[in-house]
Length: 179
Figure 1: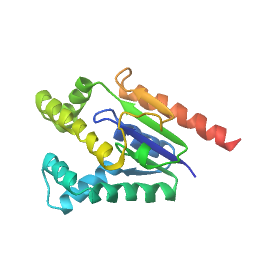
Figure 2 (figure 1 turned 135 degrees about the horizontal axis):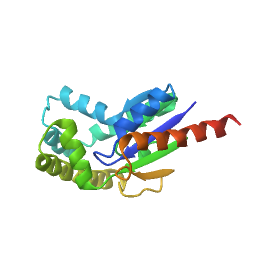
Figure 3 (figure 1 turned 180 degrees about the horizontal axis):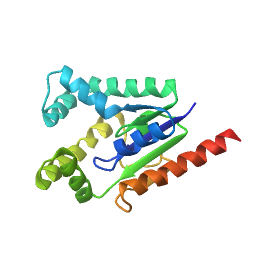
Figure 4 (figure 1 turned 120 degrees about the vertical axis):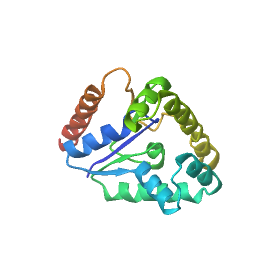
């Protein structure tokens, strides 16, 4: 059984890398962010910022997401992707934290979501502020990278190179585990 966790900041490439690894190594893929967005829709929120504000007043929603992440981790053979998944999942074969400078993240998000760079930058700054909620509610410092085996700045290489580098790390891990 294999358990890989990908965490990191907005626009760092978490989803891109996690989906790539899941496909390449024939693992399940679970996104805490997608589940969080599903819950927003179920609660009638279309505006992601208003949803975050609502969740700040209802921490049980974060706990629901975290519990789902833990259940998916227990099943194994999965790549789990989420902002703080590396803190939530205590034991994994590999935990990776992807980071990126704010301006690079905003450019990626603007392209992905087809919005202006200004709007993407504003949205990204606002989302980063929500990480304070994790410190307040759980004592999780988003900037504490000690739970991670690998920390990578994805602005150094293009995304195809990032995927290949991380793929190599996973291949090495899997070969080691077969011995």
